[in-house]
Amino acid sequence: MQTITIAHKSGLTFRVISANSYDARMARDVRRLTMADGTVWTVGTRGRGSCFAWR
Image (cartoon, rainbow, N blue to C red; front, top):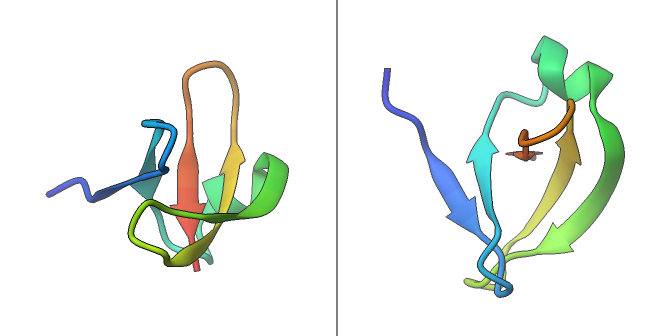
């Protein structure tokens, strides 16, 4: 399975996941964030070192 990532203008990268996934439902620090290419994604974390993005 190929992992898709997107980048924020700060250089932080997010792994793209399904909005219906367990990780998206259980994510903490959820917020909308504009990425380097101008697209807006919902992002969150599930613990140290995990950065997810979904629409």
